Length: 307
Length: 333
Image 1 (cartoon, rainbow over the protein chains, first blue to last red):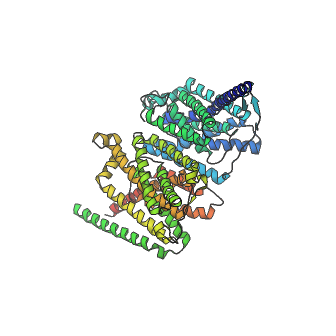
Image 2 (cartoon, chains in turn brown, purple):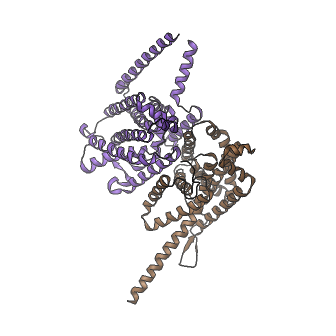
Image 3 (cartoon, each protein chain N blue to C red):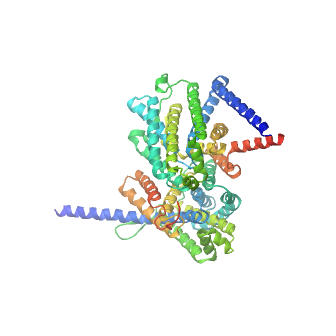
């Protein structure tokens, strides 16, 4: 009788451990998604472009950190800055030289198609250059931290990637909310015409925005490579998740992107525990379609946005 | 003056008809002219992509709905006939129609809610839908054998079971399918439906305001398109002899036929055919030569071609050629 109760009790704490553990894992991964999602939502909000190549920026960012670490032994924390710098410049000029023409003249579908073409080129360019091999770096190897309650343990790699992500997201949020540049960006997102009338150089803002979006994607890549191998098609997995998050949070909303990331991260890790993990992605895609259909403005988006 | 141009128009139309007849005659004689199995294979694959690009063109070109889920209909066609044959011994000819019907129903069921969304959100939703289909096919192992795929047994001696020896019968099947979809598209373009669809593409709101029920028309478009795409899926399964989820439900093949359609010219009858017969032979040749050294090269070319066309010739190759010809002709007159 007593034995029976003891087993029941341990069963309950085990279940509790599993549950809380899954939530913590979800928050950690959600923080990483948030950085990628903020970049996507920024570009969408300001330029009205759904950037398919966002996932490929993440993928290339992962490769940059990988090679800097393997060839030059540079710590991922340091290569974060190198990475963001490279991608900011690349995105800036990409927008200025190529995408700008499309945004100004072509019908809306072509904006989507040009980023799709870019994504196909980058994925397969990476496949040609580095083949399909999975590559990982083990900076923090398999070391774990014991949280000291409920026996929950977190991988150091995941924790570090979360810290990187939150730092980047915080700095970005400060930039967009408090600086002159950020105000100009938000003004352009609200109304292009009024922003231009206020003397904002809209072309400059577009290029800065696209560069910033790419830099955020590469920052996400930096934190992902700490716990996830890189291969040429890795971008697709993450960009689809990012689309889901951005739609959930409301296209163009930063708070929404952050909250959406945490929600999707937690849902994902909970469903990995309680549903067969093969079906967890199907669940999030179904949620995605349902949100598009029934609440297209997302949880935090503006009501009047036309979809 | 006007009479002269009228005569010119008449001459041009006659010449055009003759050219089309000659091309069709060459197409039917091609297996006699070309004996190399390698080249025959490339031609058949080009025709498959051309056929799929034509099917996609009905929704993607004429309705202007950027659909990424045509590979779902394609995969349903490929898997339905294969599963019906392997599990119940049903002839793929019947399985083909069954698959096409299932694809049409799914196209309708998906289109009904999703066509309410505007342009890029529709595109995003169809990508999610494609991923759902792919993951389901990967995980329903008892039916689809999961990632290991299924052998479709298209090579044999029984034409009643869609089995043939050699490439030539397959070539004639896909040729007839391709001609069929070309004629259908041509008829559609001249019909009321075609005008309505183009009106929607030009301006949805304006089309709505003159009383065009765009939702219904898009649904008609997607049902026809899904039905035909699934027929192509069965052909692909029988011709390749093998289906696997990552290929038939994959983004790779989707990009191939979307690029082919848009490079040639979306929303035109001949565009997708031109696009396919330019891109596929080029990429397949390079894949054969360099595929071992540079995996992904063929898709890279599709991406570059798509980007190039959108950037420089957004209406596709065929429209640009037409315009060039017209400007030369007008100078001569």
